[in-house]
Image (cartoon, rainbow, N blue to C red):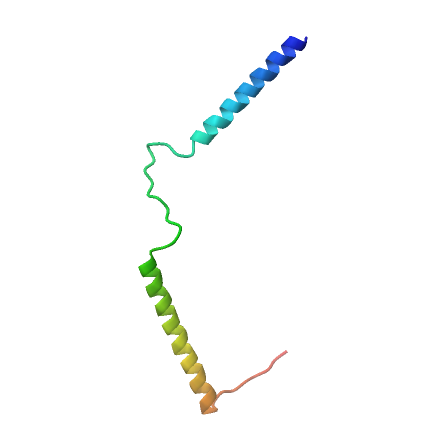
Length: 79
């Protein structure tokens, strides 16, 4: 009885290890030639996007300052 239990346990263990090994190798195969994913975007492109966003923010701040200085600003408080 004990030998049969040991045989079943070892068989189950071997099948389980084999199953997990197959799943581990399934992630990437030689048929999939995907380009490597870089951790960051293109630095030059990212820099230009940041500069453009900062210019937009600067324009909006200038518009807000002009409104505040002109006195034409109307504030409505509602609850």
